[in-house]
Image: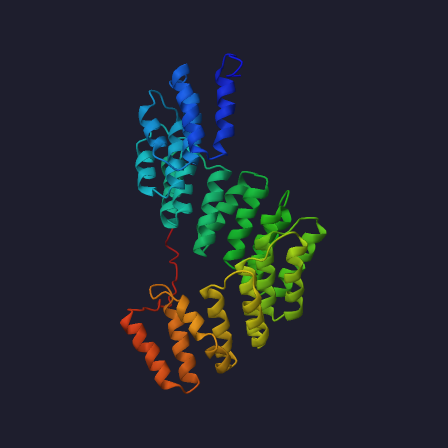
Length: 393
């Protein structure tokens, strides 16, 4: 259109900006911005908001500068900036912007709650959700509830409010679509309420790979290995194609249930679906062989894997060596592990190596590792647990 000197209108510009949002091409967005300034469309609130959305997708300070220069802003404009700060991890600026909004709609509250949840501030998100219910006439929608449910999933706790959120969806007669249904399944599964997760899953309309995977991983995580594999079989029969995370859940199920032959078969199945094994898949295989006492097979997986083994894989192997008292095999890899450990993060691995030396009767080596821990200021993260009071939210 530009080359043919055809006139632009707001619709053609809006669709052009929308297509650029997914490209995340900052030079291209700036180029379009300069054209909009020449054409005089920069003061149009819808065009400026669409341009702001394009800038938010590509990390830069341009979005903030554009927002400050806009002569007119609507609620969508403010919500876009809140979401932009959320993506960049700047929660404080997002909250300041949210507090300064002249008018808030449901999307505004949802954006701020999602900001807290996506940045790990789950308690803050729940507090804001409660404020929304108490202080505003607006009612939360499915987007809001999906963000809240993700918070419960990460916290590993449901409590009264979590069940109330589910009851709220039933009271409003909302259909359990893929997004909302999956959020409920993930929440119940991660928190160990597998019967509830299965019930929600059975009522869902349009199950996708994410919802199937959530149920598989939840079952595997809580020790229901055979049930997880049965769900995987049903998933294949339903014609849903598994992804990498699905196979992580399946292999975890095999490792925890001691199903070595089955696990080996599922590992070979990964490439059959056109996927490449990830470090998590290899880690599951090492864990599976190690727990079964097949330390030779576990070491062979590490030796032949296409990816460089990380400290989690080595830690799993050493734990299995300690469990089955294969001290000589553990000592074969100590040098490789010690080259990889980081004092600030891997205190548990140092302690594990020291313990293995002690169990094998090599006290001098154990003392050497202990002194190394002191000299490098290595600290092992303390184990902890908590009990959530019923008087919470």
